[in-house]
Image (cartoon, rainbow, N blue to C red; front, side, top):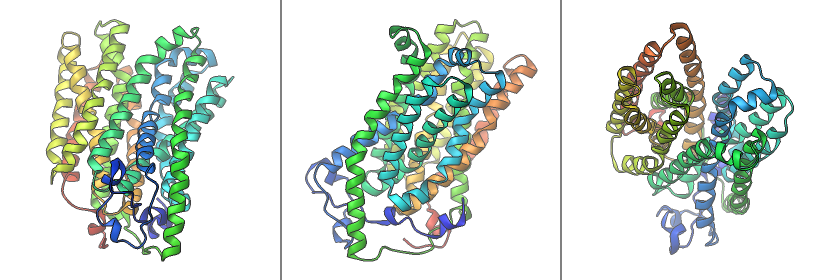
Length: 443
């Protein structure tokens, strides 16, 4: 990440959280220190509930652009006349876009405010999903997909910042809420795209277009939230100068690098699972429909656990034990796939679904390993952008090993081996420390 993004605190994020009324759901989530902060600005009572709705809707839209395409990938590839090389490139585009565009989030957040950037991100998601079904060639389809993925990348980075800024005393609960919503959106798109496509006439273009509706709905609550946030920031700036300083140099923090590598390895496992698990089951003699259902089961496991794990992690002083438990579930699942892929298919799908819940854990840790929203925005951008870069080779390497060896023994051995450093990194990331302390910064 460019040094200039590290040198200046995110002005919009550094502003104290708005002091919502004490009564009601919104006020309950605001830090008790806010009322004593001169920069705090009273906000309308509707802002808290609308913000919660906006977070849920945004999270629901963070994966359907990917998983809906996965469900109709063969039809889309045929319809657009994609070569195998282009098709392979499209499967790698999400992680690349998340890395490239996620790194711009701190600068955009500083300039416009995190709520306004999330609003623009949701608009980009909706626009890309509206355009790509009408593409007549692979290039146009890829460009429209990249637009949606850019919006997802910005929202990926800034949702932890929104939570830290507006719900500083409920980081675990709110992270669990949007992690659960993200998992629900992922599962819904994977399971419902094909049936909805059939019900609406069978065209892959229609099947992809329907998810633009959900994205358009997600824009609506962020419009008033962004306006209110900008007014609060202007009022705080007028009341007195915002805190300035050099801010934590995130790249100098060992905890930041630990989180980035942990994020990268868990993302590698998640993308391998989404891309290859059905094929593993099909090669073991499981029917195509059952293999798809098994993948859906794996994804659905993330819905309840994505809510439970962040809340549990927030109550613990050291979260390493959770990382170890999740890794052991994954090792057991891969071991089962190696020796009895068909006989224990449902058990392995469940175990891998639990293991994939390392995502809500690492998102929670990002919110806990920085003291301020300004620190969170930089740590989130650094950990996610670096992590997604780390994850890019994984699915491609698994495919190459599968093609070279003609079976799944070697690829599954690699998947299991990657969980060993992931567990070790999770233990290190779970230690109670912050990037500000490591970089010699104060609060």
